Length: 454
Image 1 (cartoon, rainbow, N blue to C red):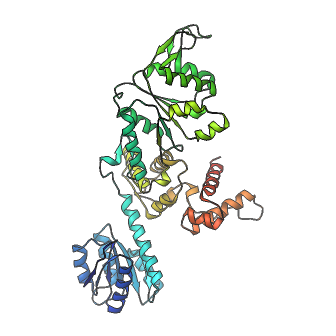
Image 2 (image 1 turned 180 degrees about the horizontal axis):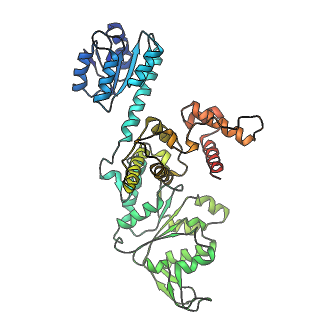
């Protein structure tokens, strides 16, 4: 038995083969790649090694004296959850391959194999192991969960730090980011970690209130201010006094309203509709937008002075596709949440589903992921969530309309899907093959999705 360690170790691999030449070849090649490699010529020693070392991948020969590679595979599969298995053999047959896969081997190599074939098979096996491990990831410490926001990625840790800094001041905050990234959760986190936490948090969706009603909703009105105003009514700013008001999608307000908001920030007072007397308010303003306000300023649809007043503290919410393994942590949290609400056992994600989650662009971000997991938990009773449980646009499909008389849009969509499937969903590779940049590909995929949902 030999153990090979490098200064910079990666995963630990156990190689079992009764041919010393093959053992040495595999050991040398994998060691040069930085792996920690342990070798043995028999299954008996392999069992002792599995009990004593943290092994990530087992590479075993099929034909060996006394105990075969298939028996070793069965033992590993029945006794260890977090190990991958790869079979190598000098006696290839279809029956052997089928039996190996059914028994639990993730990869199957026939001798002789090239260095590249070995490296590729090892990388595929370890990637599957990583996906399976991340599928069971839980929140490790308090730094991964912050006032309803969840994430271990560097991008989210930066968001948490910025929220903490914002919470100790009363300065205005501008939260930017794509739809579904959690801008309102960030605003609530600022409020509930500040000294205003015991006072109201009022969230206002500026895009959902017609421009003609927004002023009366925000500032209130006095009796007789307009037809039907039979009594005075406080607005959101008065209701949020001493607390926080969250102006979601601030970019949707008109220029006239922006002037009034600017005055509130400057003077700390509001005029109720129909009143000439200002009322002092002590309100922390947090605004958000999914638009580029600098572009809106250039187009004349957003006031530059209001932008600078709002942008005293800036927090950018990262898109889900840039948050690494956070997608697995969030998916786990959502499946536990919805399974618990419905009284169902918590299912597992298959390796293929995890790969799709990892490669998918998530145009709707965390909100899209949450809605997807809820839909799956409602519709499926299986113990394992697999690819058929996913929406159509996330699955491979040959398509029914394969004739000549198709629109250019249909042909383009089919070609994009085929290219994505050929590279395992890797959008960077697909973009290169298609001759477009990644942003253009994302826009085309979003358009395809909207067409499917019509």
